Amino acid sequence: MNISITGLTKVYPNGHAAIKNIDLEIGSGMFGLLGPNGAGKSSFMRILVTVQKSTSGSLLIDGMDINDQRNKIRPLIGYLPQDFTFFSKLKTWEFLDYAARLATSLSKKERLTKVDYLLDQVGLLDVRERMANKLSGGMKRRLGIAQALIGEPKLLVIDEPTTGLDPEERIRFRNILSDLSQKDVTIILSTHIVGDISSTCHNMAMLNKGEVVFKGSPEGMIDQVRGFVWQATLDDEEFNVLKMKYPVVSTIPVDGKWEVQVIANEQPHPRAKNTNPNLEHAYVYFMENELGVSLV
Ligand SMILES: Nc1ncnc2c1ncn2[C@@H]1O[C@H](COP(=O)(O)OP(=O)(O)O)[C@@H](O)[C@H]1O
Ligand SMILES: [Mg+2]
Image (cartoon, rainbow, N blue to C red; front, side, top):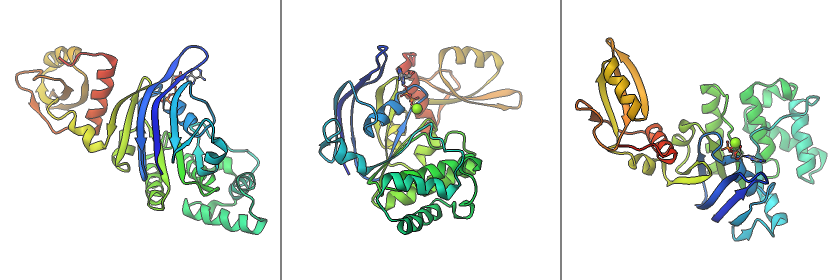
């Protein structure tokens, strides 16, 4: 699967530009879209899955234009929206069977086989009789994935699936997605959680205020901040001065002092030493840069 995006822009009727002139190439495997709230992730995804139109620019999926080949593109896509909810009166398996009736033309028998296959794949077979709205947050998200997989999509688009999940569920969820991406399904996942990207995606882009501020690999993003992450042990007063000037990425109290990490283009304090960057540092760097904070 190849997704080719040029100059994609979305301006809402109230004049707000949520997506600004995005250029992006997305290939097979798992692609991570990282960005804070309001970055434009959901707007982008709704355009990609053809539930909303762009204002300008082009988006081609395997050469097909989303604006005039929607009917061909739709069956290729499974989508889990950010605000996905369930009908309250259905059991877990019934919900999935309902989704299968909408999305496929399978016979009842075929549907039931498929439903149990998918429930097993996302680890929900033993709760198939439970009411869908009584599932835990993580289980609901997994049922959402099963629902998105029902039409055997080639492209799975998942909007912030790990928000609100506890660490164990988050890891389980990531593992399910990794398995799927091995099975010839292209996955595009949005998140504001750096750990979701670093542990699953080889390719990524970071969005901030509607713009792509980085595209490449997580390692490539980390490389961009090498030399800009500094660590120093400071007393209260030194720390107070420093935090006025530079974005702070971590603070750990040690023996009445502060072990502080900041982002800065030059040595921010005489005792500060360069430290190895990680994706969290890179995220802060690209956020601050975009906010126009000068990294002195
Ligand atoms: N229907 C809409 N009308 C007007 N503004 C919108 C609409 N949907 C989203 N926005 C605005 O567009 C920006 C991007 O929103 P969104 O795509 O939801 O970002 P994200 O998913 O990254 O949080 C936000 O400032 C949001 O308030
Ligand atoms: Mg969103």
